[in-house]
Length: 379
Figure 1: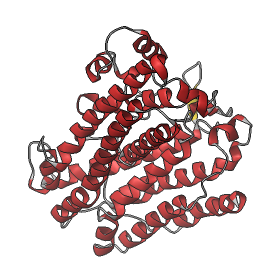
Figure 2: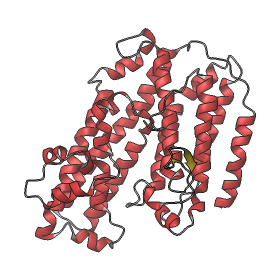
Figure 3: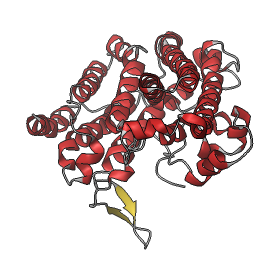
Figure 4: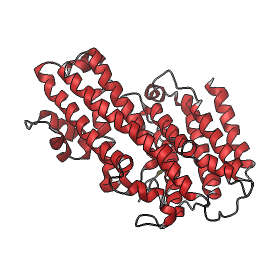
């Protein structure tokens, strides 16, 4: 099945890109006020509300687990962690404004976690509280640290559970509890900025067409959003699947770019838990909701003045839908790559690259967005 899908995906970019009409520079965006309000109300706020809910559930389940650490409560807290991770990944294209204020995103998902910090906190005698964890630095908190504490590929579940039980397991449990509470606090800070407009950023984004202290125009807001969509596509295509499969670009010892050809399962994000493919699917799900629920696709169809906007919306929608129709591999991605069978995941790389090129060559150009310096390119 993967081979058939892979062949179809190779043809898809050729078809979509070859038929793209020439796109002239975009004029000022009509109905920008309605578009930006819909993006905020129908996409951004729902995504952050879901993230806040999952973080709250994780905190509550961590408490329940530590009160009674058994197989059921262990499975429940792991599931809550996974749901919070995926909800966070669905906001990957929203890494601007409140999400990066004072680099708060590093507190939420710093990878890889710092083993030395985690080890020190586990062996220290200081009480493990959210404040203690926070002071230890980003390397010992957030989703990556919680994954490290809750998942160990080298041990069976029974042995992993035993690490939280008895007198010896109380500190590890206290760490999970403190880290979950701290994570919830950081996520709430971002979510409240949109849901409650605590920083005025949501209002500024909605009314960018009128100009304000944050945005001089709707064009600036749209440029920012499309730029972050592009960066997200780069991350999930190149960093999260391309590099682990040995298809990424790296700098050699002479500082020149070269294609990697050695796969490395340890470059997968969330490889301990087996969530690596779920993460990149969540990235695309979030992107789809921003473009579809946020009304961008419909705005393009409604403003088909140059007879290209509808085509671009339809083509982009097809790319996203095709990606999410890819089958989730039954074998753990980490094990596939480690066993030299990473080609089973190639469709995720090529389909992701098609989304990336679709944003760059069609969506950005149609909306008149100039994609500038990308923070994924390095310094």
